[in-house]
Image 1 (cartoon, rainbow, N blue to C red):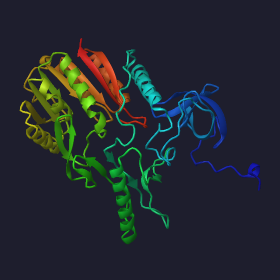
Image 2 (image 1 turned 180 degrees about the vertical axis):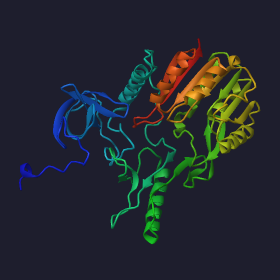
Image 3 (image 1 turned 45 degrees about the horizontal axis):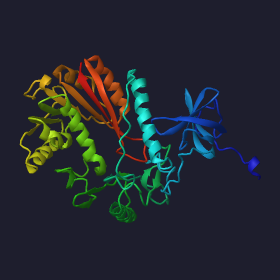
Image 4 (image 1 turned 30 degrees about the vertical axis):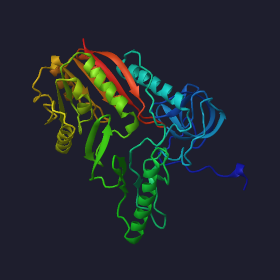
Length: 414
């Protein structure tokens, strides 16, 4: 049977055959990037998103999904490459869903991340405001201090796969033997943990999938998510639970926390409130510039570690309170007008109830840190309508080679 006579693959049951057939190959120009890291182009005004295609490229792509307003396609061939396209160092790049930009020159990554923050600001909040150029990570590879490989229980005689989600899927994993985003020591631990997990499965098969942990810190590399570990940021040493959240690019943290401290101090506030304080990252790195700093957190365990970190670093003007989501500022003993507030919520952003409490507290300035600029820009609408105005927007690239970034928005009470 010739290649021409080879039957087309059967489309998924829910595939919609308009405007393209399943696995139909198309050619298009890529004009921009989505905030998910996909190249975006148009055919007859119909949007097509192509993973691993770059702006300025002409590509051949194979359609695998038609949605209501757009199609998604796999990259088949780059017909005209971008001048910023480079060779990715990872052998499973484009299969593994962990990275989106290893094939993209780093200076161009930063330019596009900056541009996307500005686009999100307009799209989500209808605000046109300058965005400062994204601050580069000192390390482009080997920067991650935390890795969480996953595995599913294999079916039948299939070997166990330990790694990360395959690009474009929700349940398939790609085997990752070595990750360039982590250090040599972490990669050596990764090899040992993978071998041990697979051997254990052969002896007594797992009944369900799981997640592994590899975390580098001041005292080595840990695989126990319940172990207490230490990390140093500037002159401050933090203790926290290995499996809990702590920013995982140590190389950029001094600049990152220094910027937050500087902007919180700039409005002339005497007091600082860190409203999602965790184990005290922003509270304690900023303490030297305020009369008093207070961290608020809903996790009792995080509060215990934050108090320990203040004591072990001999920071006497810091206190921490266990907050209730319904009354987050109730136990703050000083006036909002004399305060600055730092917020660093989870990816889903802040709730409307929290933002209303923040506005009612009335701090002199708000420094909003976010790992998800889309929800951050959504929340800005509430803060802007509540009497605050944007002073500065500064992205930080904590996650080179990926679509992710941190963004700091500085707001001042109008």
